[in-house]
Image (cartoon, rainbow, N blue to C red):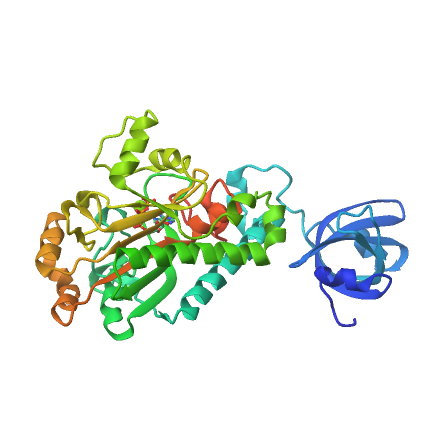
Length: 427
Ligand code: ATP
Ligand code: MG
């Protein structure tokens, strides 16, 4: 067959011959005629196969999700959803499909069991294209600003985000953990590279079922020497704004197909509003929530807070005792740390966690001991403070959380091809 085009190329072929290949998204027909909706990675188009066309008998036999190659003539048709149809002159079935197990309106559980087939759905394909844009935009953002991309190990000896969500693995004769963050390694690496980032999987054994936790998620992290809280907040609001802008520019069609109201995304520009933890607690109280000051916010609190904002915003200066050991104590209040969480509006909540890092070895040691960890495991990390320590800060963005909000999805699992959550490791 001649050179294959894609469904997206069709508008340039009105009245002309075209060769396409893809999968039968839907099929129906009556005597002597078959209507096949052909799908490729760029879109769908209805193709009409009439008796007499080469391959008509196979077109009748082919069930949905069969793969086909076809030749035909593009016809403009105002009534067609895409404005065009293809009158097929020749069709070849490349792979006949069996009865496809997924039909309309199936339960989420079945769709997860059949994930390997459901990943070809229009919905997930649209989300994955946006996801791809998000990853590309993150790389572009950091590289444009002179950051180096660097990788750190996924197998580690020590915890950095609290022991309760660690995955333990056998490591020869030792015990190791799957990493929760590149944090500690990043702090060592800035002494050579100053501005670094990475996008890598982080692992958290989240034992509660929520709509926004995965056991394996993609973490976009940045660490920068010589900056403080102001510097890291600016970087975060610029990053989020940049990514959202890129998605709007390049994936408007997919957002529309997902039913996303883009008006709210169009507002995403720096600066983002900032409130302190204390102010957030006052807000919650005013809204009638019974919240005990000193605790971390859960999704219920975050949801209520997001009602006050129509853009992403920061909550800063959380109580020291609920935050990670490496966060810097506030110079004017030893009970809080110089940290921030960035929340997405519309009820989505936390998408980034960041902080200025503690430089004092004594404070770090005290914090490590308070967490009940063995300082021996952190000796190498403490060395970073012994050999030319500098002020530095950084953050971690949950890429799936960002994609979830950008796409307006109600569950994080649909932001990733093969979600890993408690009770699900297959397929
Ligand atoms: P949460 O309170 O929502 O569990 P966290 O405070 O544990 O988040 P951090 O340790 O600050 O999160 O991690 C940085 C970012 O990684 C978070 O802001 C979030 O976007 C993302 N993240 C954390 N845990 C998960 C998870 N289990 N699944 C998906 N994304 C996550
Ligand atoms: Mg968590």
